[in-house]
Length: 115
Image (cartoon, rainbow, N blue to C red):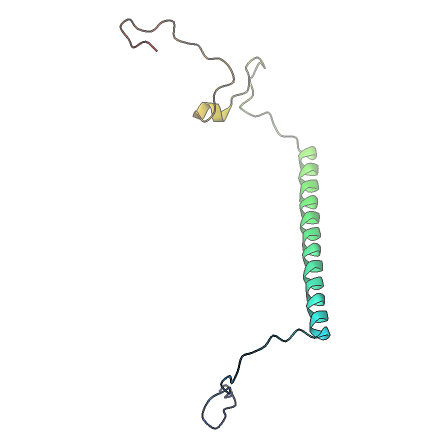
């Protein structure tokens, strides 16, 4: 069982406040403890960033070595004879305008609306 807090004679844990509470400035020991805590948090954050950047660098180097050892086969998107331009999937989906000019219709149907 948890221990009970100390009670005074009337069943309250703390005495009611009798007057206004005034600001008490922190002592030199408290200020030093806060500074040390901030310093520890900053150094821990810097160490974490260095470790993350180092890990990313290791992963990038391993990927580069793996790619150099096993070159990728030519993709299916490349033209077989090299004359056609690479296909743009965003243009194919209609998200961005096509980079090459597409064939325009020869003439509008007679009686159609004029733009």
